[in-house]
Image (cartoon, rainbow, N blue to C red; front, side, top):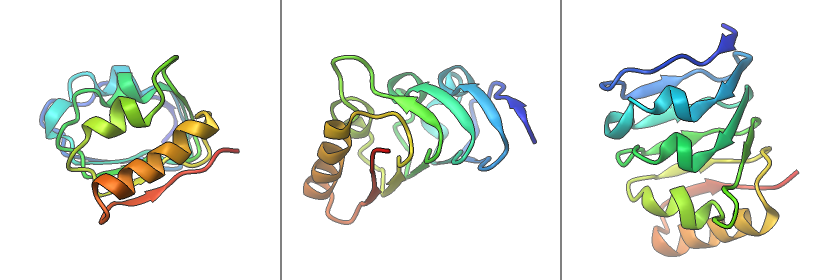
Length: 126
């Protein structure tokens, strides 16, 4: 697969689309997916935008792998105070190899471990 990301349906529970040369902003694709989404694996594509726009309604999300894309922080709202803090059911995430601010990813690891010691988190800045 390759191309831009289209809209995902409201009942979509899992998305596995890593290494597909997808491009564009994930937020518009996930606008309708909302709370039913539990697994999102879109690593190693060319996706961009902020996680706030992409995952703002994904309250049931348990696994998130967006490594190797072009996601960034929302200005004045680092990732941990934005989306990750709101995803109470999240148990594993990998946000490595994106354009997040170094301070926000370190804070994300610390906050995830403090709030939920069982959460498996992978963050780094390149």
